[in-house]
Amino acid sequence: MMIFIFTLISFLASVVGAICGIGGGVIIKPLLDAFQLMDVKTISFLSGCTVLAMSTYSVGRAAISGDSMVNYKLGTPLAIGAAIGGIVGKSLFQVLLGMFPENYVGFVQAVCLLLITAAALFYTLNKKKIKTKVMTQIPVCLIIGLLLGMMSAFLGIGGGPVNLVVLYFFFSMTPKEAAQNSLYIILFSQITSLLNTIATGTIPAFPLMIMIGMVAGGLAGGMIGRKVNKKIDDNITERMFIYAMIVIIGINIYNLVGFIH
Image 1: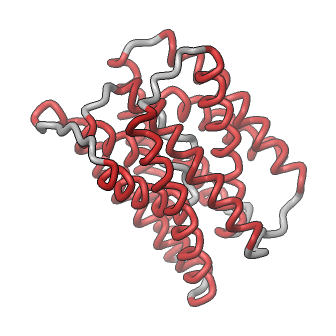
Image 2: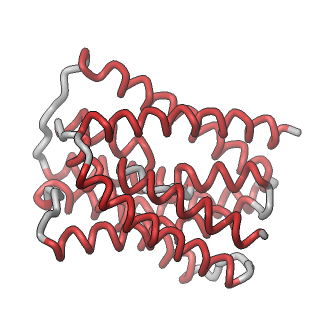
Image 3: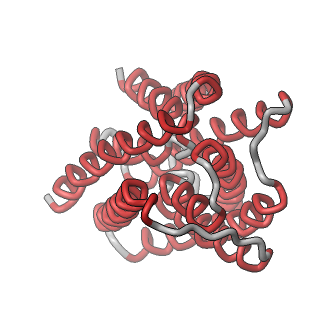
């Protein structure tokens, strides 16, 4: 039963994540926290692995088929910055785990995720009133990518809504362009986050079948989500993003209460 729950959550989250470009982890992490079937450290690791599998498929498939909307001139320095940030973010997570109880770390993650999601929702609902920028400077892209990667690895969510908001605001991308570039950035941050976990010997113990189920669900969700993304227009993509943010905010509020008690 537990394997089924983990696989189903990974599948559904990855479908939404691939369509909207939020990576799936922003849904997987808080949902699994809500079920309280595993500890914070294990859920963060499994969520990151699932997001890595989904983003690898989505980015790779788009590149092979020739319909990639990734702006490599801007996306690559963003991704390099995210790769470095992934190491920093994962290291920060491990430091906090060593200093405080897991429930405290989970509480901090939930607060950060709630604030980030609420800010992303507010921006999306008001973005027509906000003048966007077109940043092209490589150093700026590296710094933005670094911050995105740190947040991604620390929270175990991949990239989440903040990636899209940053790509909207700083680079004036459309929802579909932002979705594909977001997954490209997520791919790099999660690769370095995983390598850092392996190198430091901090991989948590968990049933192998659960990880296999989650990765399979993530890949299947990524395949379906990518197909849906190609068939719908930007307005529907943005609407799905808004609905997803509302659901995630609700889950995180529930988790905050759970971590306090």
